[in-house]
Every structure is written in structure tokens, then in C-alpha cells.
Length: 269
Image (tube, rainbow, N blue to C red):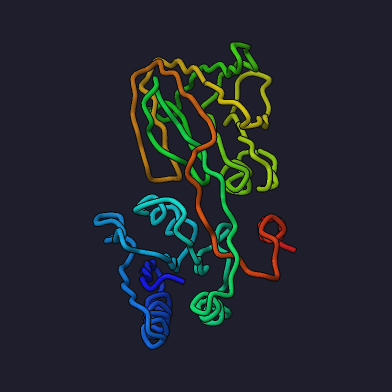
């Protein structure tokens, strides 16, 4: 295992900073280099380029903000849940110290999480681990869109917004909007119309090929990626979606399969 660890954490609960300090002391006492920074400073300053393992304490929002600042793809990420939902977080606080010890000893496995790549008119605007939310920038207004693949129209719709999620993100905002829970071992995109005026339902598309969404509105269009990366465009845009070449490497628990854990949290059993 590499010798440079970086810890980032939310400040929403005092116990999070306390646990971050405890983990930092454990890593340093084990002979490794470690740095820590609360999440707002990470968003502002980024994550050091020499980071070899990232440890995130907080909820899904903290994780999504931190991975957008990773200096390169493939850095192992250990997540400790202090969030309300924490669907993306792999470890709970009560077993976090044991998880860190196993990582320090090299006893861990990696789960690669797919991300979606988004381009507008050929220009890349970002990758999504969870989802992109596309809507008119003016609340309460609608947009028209056409989904195409291989020069064939898959469907057309009019709605308040459109959510395009990864399988991992399918149990988040997309699920709340009526979309299906999709196994994250599948390479697919989930399209969920928000308050459609047409007879349109969620669709799951394979990522073997890219697809496009042509959007028209009387108002400028905003695209919000993973809840915090916002881009604003003119009224008519062509959005291209595909599988990103980048991915997130989650350090995973040995005893629990991720999709089962997310379903258990979502359905509360």
C-alpha cells in the first residue's frame, strides 16, 4: 500500500472531525504519511497530487464533492458513513478503525464504479458518479427532448426535467423520481423524466454505444452533475452521453455486496 493518505471530512457533526483525527493518528503511528482537510477547503484547493489513498468521512454529498477533486482516476477511496442516507458509503463509524487497519496492512479489495461522461455540442462538461439533472434554469418551466442512438429516435418527451443516472446513482435521486433500482454490475444509463407531460416512463439504456439527447426550451438549460457541478447553456443543446474512461475505485467491505446493501438501505429492511 502507498505511503500517502489524505483524509477529508464533513463538519456537520462534531463526532466526524473527532473520528478523522483518530484515523489520522492511527495512520501516522503506523509509519505512513497522512494529511487531512475539511471538505469545503478540499473543494477550494483540491486534493494533493501525491495522494495514494483517499479517506472520506461524511455522507454522499461529501463523497461526490471530494471525488470531483481527485488528482487522477483509480485512487482507492475508503468511505465512512455519517450521512442521512449514505447509499454510496461503504463503512459505518463503528467498524471504520478496523477497516483502516486492514487497508494499512494491504488486506482489502477494490470495486470499480462506472461513471457517465457528458458532452455538450462536442465539449466535455464532466463525469457523473451518481447522475446529471437537466432542466430549464427558470423553475416551473418545461423542456422538450429527443433521445437518439445510431441515428434512430428512441423516444421524445416534454417534462420539467430529465435525470440521467448511473446504475450506482439509480437508488438516489432517480429512484425518488420513479426510476428503477439497477444493479451496479451492469454498464447502463437510467433515464428518468421528471413530471412528464407526455406518456413517457423511465428507460434503461446499454452503454455499449453513446446516445444523444437533443433539448429544446424557451429558457436557458442547466445541467447539474452530482449535485454540485453546474453548467448553463443556451436554449437548444445537443447532449452526448457515454461511459467515461475514468472510474472510482472504492475500497469495499468483504462481507457485503454493494447493490444488496443499497437496496436494504432504500427499502429499510
